[in-house]
Image (cartoon, rainbow, N blue to C red; front, side, top):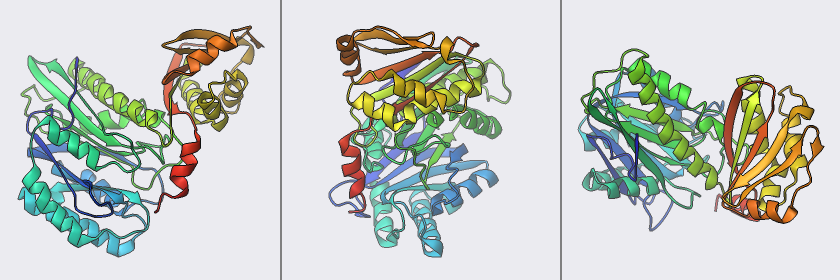
Length: 407
């Protein structure tokens, strides 16, 4: 398996584009388009929030009813959520505008929006943007990068990656792009994300793969405990790699899922590290828990604790906050069996073991916590299950960013 410095155009048969439609922003691209040259099997996962945006409602219906799709159009700046029938009509108009560009029926176009809730999507600007997207479509790395940048809101940089691997003697590629910086919390895939692949795989197994994958990737990140109304992760598989179609859960399916996980976990970590106002990526790994459920609960509880997040921001080795977060996670464990330590490129330091604090160097611990990527590891010593979750520190800038987000 080989990681590529590419995005959604890495697999055979995919093009991407971006355009400055002026939907909300001036002087920057705010629409993106990803197109497969042939019909592609489609699957997706979406927000579990009861309040769902117009594009989410439409996409869920189309993916359930249809085998394939040809394109996904995305806009940033306006979420098109809580906009009633006017919002549904605007979303349909965006799909129809792209359908004309791609020369297919509108039900072959999936849609996604991100931005401010409650504002209406300007159809005239969307239609102008569709024409600009048509002229910009390309299969280059640059086109993929521009598309990844166009879907950003409070993100500080684009998020994309790709991986290639071999199946049945054929080189198969999976590419992806995502946006997400705020309203990030485990409850599906708190973001907008597009995954492309030239793998030949049945729709049923594609859906099963992406549904299982988010439990280990995007469901294991959190920035601020808020789950958006627009969270959407969609995958297109156009079969152009030439591998034998994956129709059962054998070795080929396992290899595909491993490659998919490589892409999604990379994107998930990028999102966690780019949390609003974040200065550090926080990774929490729980080892040797009694059950998988316990391991997940414990790791998530650590990364979502505001007190842990602020301690990481201040480079304070306050192990009591970590243990406290574990204690209210809902998982049952023996505190006197736990070993707790921190790690980064600056080294590692044990903080707590067998129910008691361990004498450690505060200076060394601070040096460890000053790094851009910090790990907290908890060995429960009660079983064989493990889980890893990703989050970020909580800084002053988070409040600044969200205090005036609408303006």
